[in-house]
Length: 127
Image 1 (cartoon, rainbow, N blue to C red):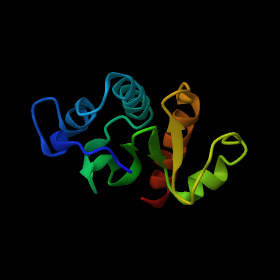
Image 2 (image 1 turned 90 degrees about the vertical axis):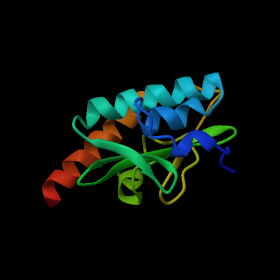
Image 3 (image 1 turned 45 degrees about the horizontal axis):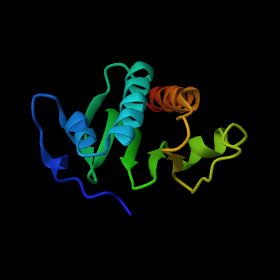
Image 4 (image 1 turned 135 degrees about the horizontal axis):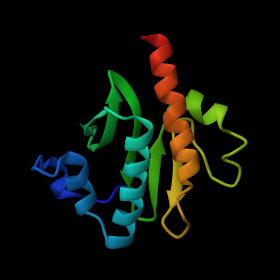
């Protein structure tokens, strides 16, 4: 169940993604900021907004999304991307379109980066 975040709709000077993160407890916010920073490095120039109420990064098309929950961050890079990284995701529960990263473990930022880069390249090939 997603944590209710009434700041989600705040499109203040800090931006919608930062406003979204501010609505979460300190530990969760730290992990989300690390993910955000990693995505920004892998997808420079991506626009950032909230789509379906969650942080969304786009280069024309959606590159990746993530969402905060009570015990984990859901990272949503597309089903094809999860399939491509299946071996590296051993040890993580995965669904068709997402990977939950629990708050009680370090976020695998190398995997977040590589999935982001993979999607950026995939979007570039389709453009």
